[in-house]
Amino acid sequence: MRAAGTRPRVLMVGPLPPPVGGMASVVENLVQALSEGVELRVINTVKTTAADRSLWQGIAAQLRLLGRLASACIAWRPAVVHIHTCSWLTFWRNGVDVLLARLLGRRVVLHIHGAQFHRFLGGLGGAQAWLARRLLRAAHRVVVLGKGWRGVLSAWADPARILVVPNGVPIGAQVQPSADGPFCVLCLANYEVRKGQEDLLRAVAALDAPRPVQVALLGFEAEPGRRQRLLDLAVGLGLDVDIPGPVIGADKEARLQAAHCFCLPSYDEGLPMSMLEAMAVGLPVVATRVGSIPEALHDGAEGLLFEPGDIAALSGHLARLIAAPETAAALGAAGRERLARDFSLAHSAQLLLDLYRSLAR
Image (tube, rainbow, N blue to C red; front, side):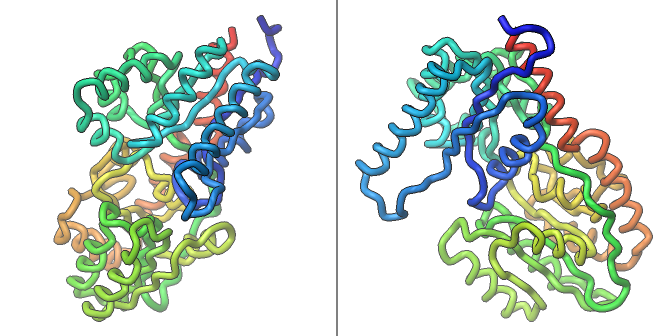
């Protein structure tokens, strides 16, 4: 047993940037925020082999990761192994990590990400459903992003072991949008159908706005050909659209500071990091009622929400923000206050630190 006041050893298993993505951003943020409170080591699970790798090369790479996990558990003896996972094949692969860490006598935290995890679980039956329940119940704690996700997982894991830890981001400088030039709508989301960028373009095309509107779609091409289809649609609708691909670091911060509002028209989400980053700088947010988004934003007070696919409602929300800059500013300020209170990186890190200390005892 560790002496009171010592820093618990935590082995974190998950991806680090690059690539561009929510789970990698969460892991990177937590590594920085937790470094003073715990002794932390990370096994980076990002794919390092070539895209055209053979099956055997892929298997060898996964065996090497398992070997690193086993070696760390045996030689370093962490108090907690914190495993980040999401849907489909990733979950089954991380299930092996859970079982190996348990076999080696470690306490395990399984951190659920993935906007479509509910669809993944709902599609399981028979032996797969049985195995998924056993893997989830093998973890000492299951971390989820919001109360809604706790409800989803309660049928699969021990409800007493489920802990809500929302994603958190650092609080940024308050935006000061320009009153001149185009009204800029920023969307930070990978180029894929479920993100709903086509709905955003059609909603902007339906606007009868008193000033020009520009749309910036920033993201990684998760589905081949999706970026070009978005470009073709924008041209066909006669829109002013910028679709540059992924933007990170200082370039992303500059984009956030230059925008007038943030829009995320997704059909599935967990608790999107891009939305939290927009809230952190006081951008008014327009987003769909999916995942944990309604838990982070009260409609009409801290942002504007709509049902996925409701292009008319989205267009109406954008028109309201364009016509009433004071309303946009008030929504952005309220969202930033909410983030500072409930979704800051410091808040999320403290919840995990308390969890680690509890398990270490």
